[in-house]
Length: 410
Image (cartoon, rainbow, N blue to C red):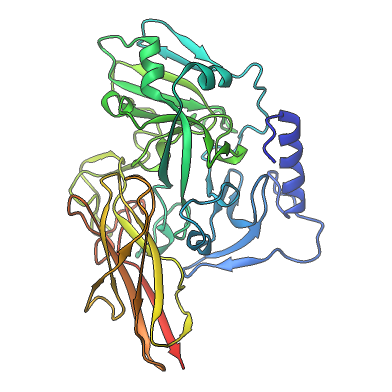
């Protein structure tokens, strides 16, 4: 259901939270039985599966604010992650549950020649529509696998998704308002609000040169449908190649600044060591830090899970996905012996440099044996995944080669 009626969406939210067994206020369901669940392979990895509004059952990490992870098997079903299976990550608990599209506007202000505001209809009718396939990945995706353990949401590998995003270029909006000569950064705010006054509002900024690139969008649709409420209805920022912390949801305010932005969510939050790997040794502190920005190259095996026992035959099909920050995937290699030997895989259709890229190959396995499957992606400028995970105290930037342990049977 994709009605834009606020009351309908509010009822959906209330009903789903009650039926799903969780509510924004921590109330327990009247159901006698517990919801189905998934256990992720690390400490405190138990996750109930709950259906929130416009969503199929997803893994729940927190309910207030909602943090919902996509079960990993979904990534084997389609190159594009269905809207109802797309992960959810909010920073503030007071998220919008209704939006009146008759009064909603996104405002452009600050260091511009003329402050402007646009309705959703204005964006759809007055500006060129642009659609692009882009991976959205939480900066903390895979944090639960950090060793030693780090603080923060203990995500598995499912805090990511790939979608066809449609909207208007941010550049077109900024040029419509007219940029002053001293414009330096662009800051974004959404409709979500903190519960307590001491909690800083969630604000994110992009350097002007990055904000003005062709592919940064103010999006109003994903996969051919209006944005789900939990993924930012009615508008969200789409910043291809950058971690999702910059993809502000329920976007309603764009401010052009003439200086660096030092609000809490830019400094000290979401910062990484200022070195080539963005890492330090466990227990060490980085002397200099910079804001996190673009993603690392990654790949995953999607049709075989860790611990699977599979039938050995003449050929076994292995499939997966790969992505990077926008250079595009050049090749993916597969090893079945823990990285001792590698073979090239066949890449699937290219949906663009910011999209998942599917890959597959066939391997011959012997019955009664144990194997360690690994995939390694390399992008078009020669960057590859790391053979071993690099560590930082926030659990960011993971792009290690992941291992899938498999046994065979005749």
